[in-house]
Image (cartoon, rainbow over all chains, first blue to last red; front, top):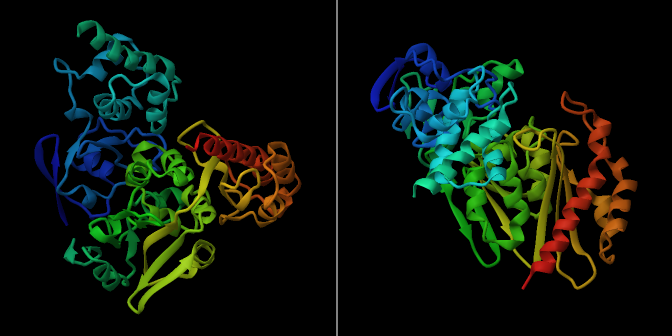
Length: 156
Length: 286
């Protein structure tokens, strides 16, 4: 069956079963490989995308549930030359390690920091609980995210 | 009803009656999908036929009255926690809904899915709803059936051809609390869960309800501890001691995250946490 998706601002289609995990459609059919497929059970967060702006585990979402909604992947939030605040902060603080968890981290934290740019450390930690980093870089990631609010304070 | 594909493998009804009509043909009810889509990880076949119930408005309703809260079975953990944040008696349920799993899962996982998944022992909402004396409505083509939580949890593995539509929680002069022990501080399945509610009654504990989740395959009330505490003065050490002497009411299930003995061993500490929380809530009352 042909599934139609609105992804990163473009209409795309894929001939797949409606219950195919969205991550497989994104990676294997649409060739957007920034989204990672790792645990496939909603623990690690590497497959996080935005569905109508809400961070969602794409490994557990049947593609049919994304029809008619705005899907944003890591390729759609920014790149060289137009990185968002979270991406800037992570780069400036040199916290990107193996890269497996980072697309998901960026997706989760982009949505969260837009909503709560001055969130305290404990709240950021709780918001990151769906993203596992096996390089154990959590504290430096949080330092980077906290710098976003600090920078806004000094530029206000 | 909207048919999602020509083979009618996947259907998206917009009414409860439509959903009931759509059942059969090997279709599974799919709400947040977080359990069913994990089937391959459990060594099971991925779902190929489903009735998607996320487009049924009646299942999304939340009603907060003077005496009762009614929640549609399609309400997500996130929406539940947001909607009930202003209901002091249901702080335990808000805690359960806002600590379960992780933020992206809570955004899609539903109340009904959590209650109906008999194979998932570590759900947070079931023990809390047991403690709150909640009742559920189960709809079939022949009509609706009203059950208390214990009845529903005992029967759910054998129910078929129907749909859990709503959960009703009585309100009153009580407070509730919820404690869970995940191996990581957040985002993990809890090894054990203790939920409790208790009436405000000067210095004596009244209408004590305590439920335990994740220790055994199905959550259940801790009737021995409830009886031991009922009518007693509030004494945190005595409460924890009673819990310690009654953990043999449970036989912990062995799992990759914890052995059975460990699940029962931590129960007194969780009981202490929930009663500390209840005490603080009563102290804060205007």
